[in-house]
Image (spheres, rainbow, N blue to C red):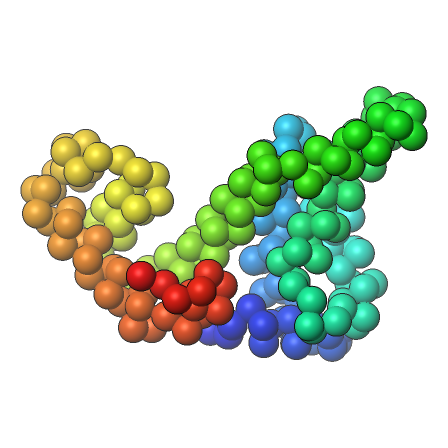
Length: 192
């Protein structure tokens, strides 16, 4: 990541920073779409929710208070948009809509949000690693760390020895810690 997400937020406060907005959109739109899909929406509805969120962000980013959590602010925004869509589609009563709002804060939704948040950040990290490692090294890392494949299965799929899989994982993690440790620490606390 060329910039921390925090500095990207500073950039998009300037609505004229088109490069900042392109980077912001490329990073956060898939997060919003993925979360909406995980909440049960089809692709078109999830893309519509992401677009509504991006529009709301453009309109509200100047008023976003930096002492608040952007992660929580964004989550609240997308949850409200999902609840609004369900309410509109199903012509829910006010009581039903309130119940759906409770579901937005439910532990299952918390897990979905965390998974999407982490996946988005890891995907951005891996994109930045493409020039630093051979493709099979990154693929072994992705399969092992992100997809939770077993070492024997990865070895078979990638025609690698189990030791090569472990070495690939170790090399990528070492590189991530060296080059992106501060970013990860800012996102997740101190990274192992």
